[in-house]
Amino acid sequence: MGEKYQSPIPTNAVGFQAVRYQRNGNDRLYDTVIFSTENPAVTLDVIYRQMKVFGCIASEAQNSDGMLDYIDSEGDVVHHIPLTKKGLSWVYKKYDLRLVKH
Image 1 (cartoon, rainbow, N blue to C red):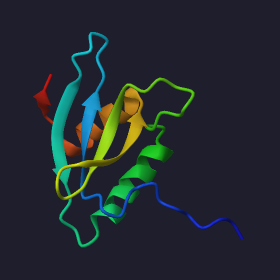
Image 2: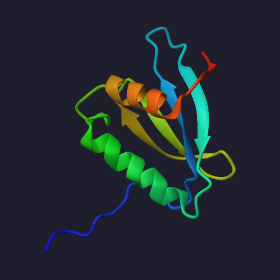
Image 3: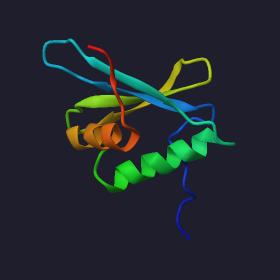
């Protein structure tokens, strides 16, 4: 039998916010997405696994183009995942994210 799956998503995570890095240091911050399901961390883990399968998560060897910051109910960042350019594009389109700050 294989190892039991251990989600990288903290159990207190309720949503995420995407950040795109810019060469000039003027990073772009996008809408916050909050899940009001019974267990938001499970929903976030499903999204994480989809992104992993589609090649959206940057490996340690790659330079990431941005981050997906996981937030708790207080709005504090509790974890983050490095994303590729493809990953950022996927998140923007899937959740219809809008630019908040640049």
